[in-house]
Length: 272
Image 1 (cartoon, rainbow, N blue to C red):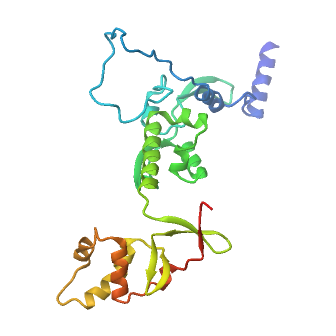
Image 2 (image 1 turned 90 degrees about the horizontal axis):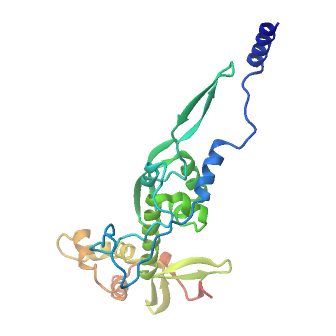
Image 3 (image 1 turned 135 degrees about the horizontal axis):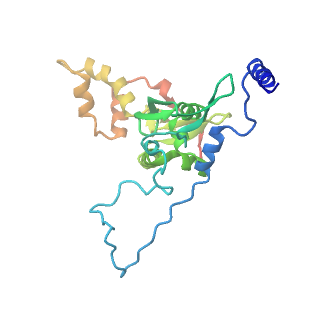
């Protein structure tokens, strides 16, 4: 009788399919270990303390600040890419008869080259498919790296922390070295970049293109009025350190048409 009931229960399991747990997913439980990470506590040595035997004083200052959450203690390779806190997954492979076989699986890691606006180059890295979806959702690699939420910083790892520092530093340098001013134009307040404010052909104007585009408009006029052969490479090198106002004067001398890159004075600064 017992064998018959056992056969019936086995048939019912086969016909009803697999049984799934109602608990949280494995990824949700794994991600808790990332969110709940604490800042590594390090002993602070003061002047006059004895130097421990294991403490090495570097010859040069480190290039990057110390990652506050330290190295990964379980999945070491996650420090060499953007893994988003994912680690080796573990669970059971359940057969149609209900047999549970332990198994493990690695994150879906891919190698990609992503564009960084701040660094102005492609960055080659290893990242998981989930992080790639998050980067697309955030609107780019820079936005993903520079988000200030604590959970985002915890899942960056050492590789992402260093890349975040490079992006923030490049943004800071670009703001310091900017040779233009952002102004608002028209009633809708459209922002435009102004590289030069002054007079052109006796009219007060503001030029909205930089040196390179201005030289590309000036070159055909200069080439036509210069005897012999003049190449653009030689022309650009010659005017590489020429002040912007002198380039504008040369454009005025050769009667270069700048009507499509010039705006009037009816603009206001973006900070107003």
